[in-house]
Each structure stands twice: as C-alpha cells, then as structure tokens.
Image (cartoon, helix red, strand yellow):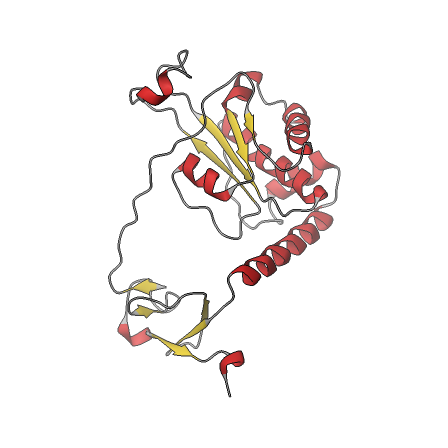
Length: 233
C-alpha cells in the first residue's frame, strides 16, 4: 500500500549478543544446536566463523540483534551483520576484549512452531545462505522452493525438492493459521480501480491507495473499507 504521508522508518541500532568461544544458540529444543553443528560440518564452513554465529527462536530477540523488523511469515531468516568500525560500546568492552573493532556476525532466526523435520531443513537452508556469504557469493531467492538454493538444500538434507516444497507449504499454512488465531482479520479494504483486496488486523490511520496500481500514493486508486462476511447482517 502507498500512504499519503509516507515516513522513513529508521532501523534501530543492531545489538547482537557478545562473541564467545561457542556461538550463542538459543532454542526450545536441544536438537537446535545438534543440527547447527551437523550442517555446519556438512557445508564445510570455516571454524573461524563459528564463534561469530548467533541463533534464536525468538522474533523480538532477532529484531534486537539485527536492528530491523522480521517478516511475520518468515519460517527462518539469515542476516549478515558487517564488521563495525565504530568504537566498542563501554557495556561490551568487558565481554569482547579481543575484538577491535567489532567483528562481523552471522545472525539466524528459526520459527519455534516448526515440526522437527522442518526445523532441521530450515537450519540447513539458513546455513546455506551463511556459507554463500562466507564464500563471497551470496544468493537471493528467485522463488522459494524453485531455485538453486532449493536444489542445494535438497542435496544436503537428502530429501527431494518436491518434498521440501510440500513441507514449506504446510508450515506456511500452519504459521498463517497461528497468526490469524492471535490476530484475526478485522478489516478488509478494496482498491476502487482494480478491485484488489487488502485484509488487515488494524484500520489504516491515514489515506491509502493501491500499490499495484501505483507505487506512490494516488487518490485515483484509493482503498475503501468493506464489511467482512462475518460482520454482515
């Protein structure tokens, strides 16, 4: 959607956990670290990168680490945080005396509601991104489940690309169901020009227009509020 008064949202300062001999890996299952070790070795990622890894299953924690918002539908996410040339903050100097300046970091999020198999392949997937970065050839997804990253994921996990696609679809549907239970759709907007609909959990606080018709705000393509089916009658 395009807003009438589009504001630039500044990212907060990234605050990853301190570098340690062993990476910071926080998860609800003991298998989390097991799979990280397993696929780290299978991908032959250099040992020197191991202490620079931090992984979590907490969305808020990942947001604090990276300084940017995590996509609500992300089942996993990898973020490369470049080395900082700024002085080490006083609050970190005691825990990071050997690093000057702050080193680069590898930050990973794994969705906590995933089934065990999905957790395993998601860890493999994010470590493929990390390995690409270390090798100096990071790849962007052309289409999740249908690109070269998906082929590599299938090869390293020993599962077919078709099975991984089905797994991705199932977990995406499950996450969407959980999200809707927590925050149900209460408002439905529709473009006055093309008819595209925009379901929302909250009302817009300002005038909005259809981003499919025009990337910038355009009153010709304004969105109008429609009643939900559950609200009719």
